[in-house]
Amino acid sequence: MQKHFEAFGKRTANHVPLSPLSFLERTAAVFPARTAVIYEDRRHTWAEVFERVRRVASRLARKGIGPGDTVSILAANTPELFELHFAVPLTGAVLNTINTRLEAETVAYILDHSDARLVIADTAFSNVVKDAFELNGKTLPVVDIADPHGPGGDRIGDETYEDLVAGGDPDFAWRGPEDEWHALALNYTSGTSGRPKGVVYHHRGAYLMSMGTPLAWDLPRHPVYLYTVPMFHCNGWGHAWTMTLMAATIVCIRQVTGKTVFDRIAEHGVTHLGGAPIVLSMLVNTPEEDRTRLTAPVRILTAGAPPPASVLAATKALGFEVMQVYGLTETYGHVVQCLWREEWDELSPEEQAELQSWQGVGFPMTESVDVIDRETGVPVPWDGSTQGEIVIRGNTVMKGYYKNPEATEEAFSGGHFRSGDAAVRHPNGYVQIRDRLKDVIISGGENISSVEVEGVLHRHPDVMLAAVVALPDEKWGEVPCAFVELKEGSQETEDGLIAFCKQQMAGFKRPKKIVFTELPKTATGKIQKYVLRQEARAFANQTS
Image (cartoon, rainbow, N blue to C red; front, top):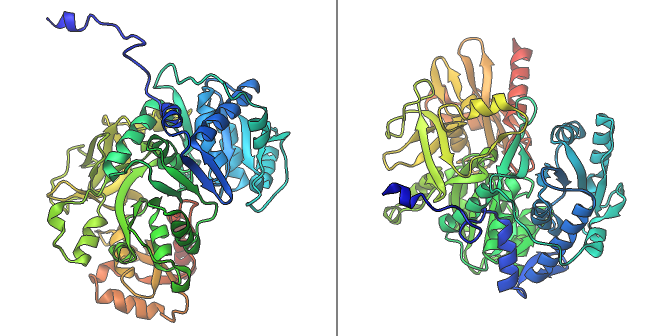
């Protein structure tokens, strides 16, 4: 009878809270001498990383940092930031990694809203931290990361990160959370509309994300991973924990350029890396003299705005194997993948690239991904044309927004997380994003996908990057306006590019205005469309 099956209680022998912290202890025990981290002239084995993490955690605990406290970090992708992904939560505290490109006002807001008790900051960002303190009218304790390979900056703390290491206890008790639902990290959204929201991650979600990623990516044991994804962004897609699980060698990189990426691949035998589509574009457009020939395929996860098929094809031609993934800060990063299908092997490179640009199906740890009608909540037909909103359920969805119950309830309305992304579902079940819902251009009653228009612009040989937003128009309500970065030396004109579009798409979809400019980007390489929308509105006001 059922009662006999339910008679057992949870015991320490058969129920352990899931946490990615456990990966480090195992890897350090099984592969102590393997190289864990490489950064410029620094090398650390897994045994050394384990000891450094315990030393730092012990010093943080001695400073009074404990369960529920927030520790804020402003740092580049250096070994210190990697170690803090374990050291901070090891004390029971919550890790808050802050976007290093943010201005002092937003940093001040995050420090205040997150209830930060301690700041650990690379000296390159000391001025931003000082200005944030001044704006808040209060100063927090600071630990400096003094990176000799960085641009320098003032010391503003009482001690350095290496002081924590030197004075810490190498035998500090290793303990996980009492409850896997406890907060692990606090990540703030980009804040493109209003103040950024604080997204709370739990230990269970980070553990399952780390378990699901190797299955989805066919990640082998001991990959050599180039950390081009900023670790402040969704905790670097959780790869700090995933690569620890897989006993990888993590190559840290402070400044991402095409030449640096190619150099590190050649120097360290990099096998895997991740990045937004702008990273792919950067690799494709790296001058020939700055490239090194790949002696083996390098696998890339790319996520962000849907990458143009032309960029995917060009990246593949260089020897990179790219998999498109999709996710949000609220889902710990990637939870949907464009899983390759055998029947695609015989297609042309152009057709393959087009399919690769789809977002795809859920990761193994994702409970469900669907596309629903926003009004009725009913799933849209799998016809590749009916648009709806992507919704997600699973253990890698955030706990909620910190100190924002109203936004949390709105995000979870209907029993799933509402992404805000407009998409279709193809007959094979694969999801394809058409737009952010706020980026759909409605012109004369017709919906225009900015992603579709951008894809056409990227086919032009002189276009390096393109972004399309709505331009207010008296007659049509809105029309497409394109902002374009041309390749160096190009003499292409607005009329010429519009003529090119005329050959590729319906008249109502064509950009009515093209602006040649450097596109504003976030630190993760995403194009800041809200800035472009403001510029488009300014253009409209000037001509009205």
